[in-house]
Image 1 (spheres, helix red, strand yellow):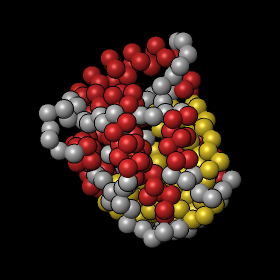
Image 2: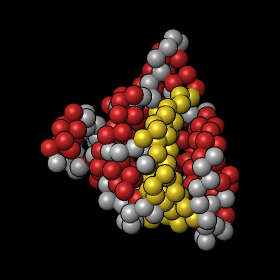
Image 3: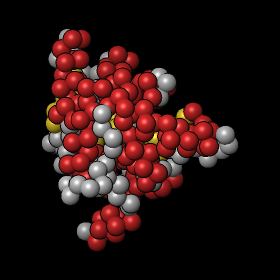
Length: 253
């Protein structure tokens, strides 16, 4: 318990709405509810479509493990879940997210594609996963772990629901280190993206929160340490597009 407290104190807590008294968890839920109708468009438009490539690379890394039952934490509108179903042909994918607004978009996409028997999405909390121990072959998280209110607790829950020898795959933003990607990404994420995102989504805070949450996230070796602290092993890191994003893979012994 003391270690959990120390980890929580050491992490910089970044929230979407500075003037709100709500917890980070409730603010994140509200933010994604607000932007859910435009989220898919903004995701692809503001990343110039590169997010598709990043997801495909994540799925290719999962193929070697051949998972049959998959959990997609922070599934949002289900983009990664749909990509995983198409390439991996699993028996079942369950997507979980805090935001019912995002899930409603995902449900409509599932119905349109007639995948109700293969894809299921539920509203839930990453820190209190509503699944039994040792249930999933793989757990994937796409651009979601930096939104966890308590990163350590969220990772512990993922570890709990994974089967022994199961894997976690995390796709997340990171901070480029080399010129000129570092300077270009910094300018775009802090000067251009918030203006465009706020204008299209009508939520002024959401796309200011994004670069702030990336800055606060314990990326690279620090995140590997977070994974290993909760019990994961064989942790690896693959950087993408000059370090703008990273894929983390680890195994439950």
